[in-house]
Image (cartoon, rainbow, N blue to C red; front, side, top):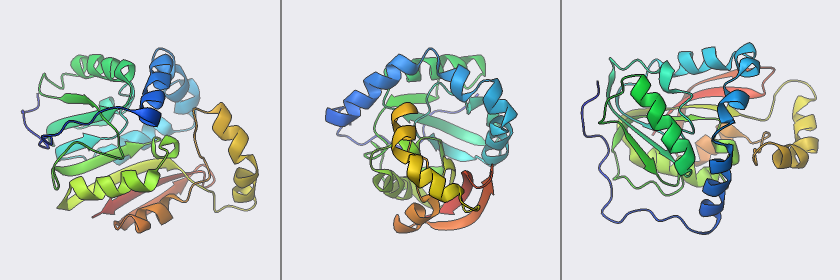
Length: 226
């Protein structure tokens, strides 16, 4: 069971408006079927479950997860190293399912699930030891702003781990992603699957500690520090 605490909330609460509100409402509609698509048999066959487990086993201290969704990552955490756990998402429907999953996994009542925008995190500077992002950067309208927020809320010796869709470095796959980016975005919850994740991380001011590609370079697992 986790202890209370974690990143202190800013005194001015974050308020949903405009585009963020639209995204949250859209993902409320996905909440019931989200696990079947992003955590179903196809995802396991592609190795995504194992990828999550490998990337998140190092989570420690005060942990923040961006765009937690229904909590597909929650089973991958080793709670022995996690002091506090905080998760954000724009969708109340997604957050409710994540809360239920956390309860089943004995995260404890102290785990926090907060409706918030990844591009305007409602936490003080240097609040977290470890920040997690999996497959959400591609649907965030301003991914650079989100990464700058990650850097801001990380402590000096903190780490961020990202598993993301990225432009492939294998053969003509990157070209194919560029050509198909608009139809893919319209059919996949707004996902931009040809983004330059490593470039975005560098522009945010964070430094890449480790980067590994998977699935012919279509996915990238990155560990970064502020």
